[in-house]
View 1 (spheres, rainbow, N blue to C red):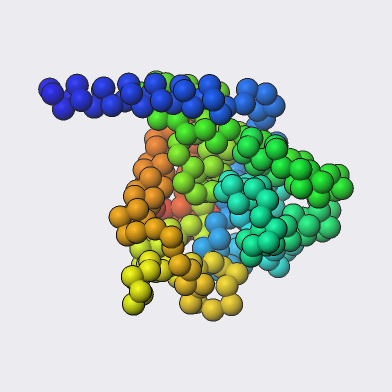
View 2: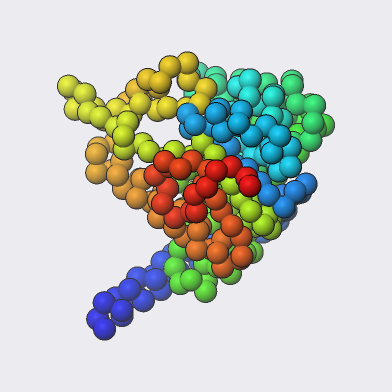
Length: 285
């Protein structure tokens, strides 16, 4: 009984904090939904398995909307499959840092999109990105790119409250990675079935500590030239990294429950993915 009371008090406190975050960070203007061309959508994660998934299902992909994330726009596959949706979530995609490797890569991504897109592309960014002048300056030259903003505000608390605010698009579960945001945008938009591809999320297999006690991660993507990844140095301690992953998998669980509540099927096409809350099956029956 005491545990139940304790849990309720925590949920009430989380609800209170979420209301404060909504007041401070949520935009109530221009909240749109994806302009669907199909009842199904395939979210293309950047995991190593994406290439084989796409190659085996080229004909099936013509029947579904395709959603790209992160740096897929810099890959040959992007021009081959011509996704009609693109989601960016990390602040690195709109906070200008031109003198860094990441800043140069981000600028190149937007320039490539502006120069090459000749089909209708809905590009989704958090509302914070509205302040970025360089995004507007680069993308405004291409009439095929439609920039749409969404609320990334972290929502937690009582389920009746979270589901109401999710449905109103005032926020979402903690978007620890871009797949969380992409899933919520697809759920908002009423797809009957949402497929995930290239979503290994098996980071723990590629985590290690070097001789200088630096936490390293072999960050593997489908577009890497080798299977070794980039062995990036993480500016975190082990406990902090596991906490970050805890939040990511917790968000997946919340998203799975919300999708079920809305009568939407989310299917993970990677049968060895570490995400354990979505049904797994081969890509599109």
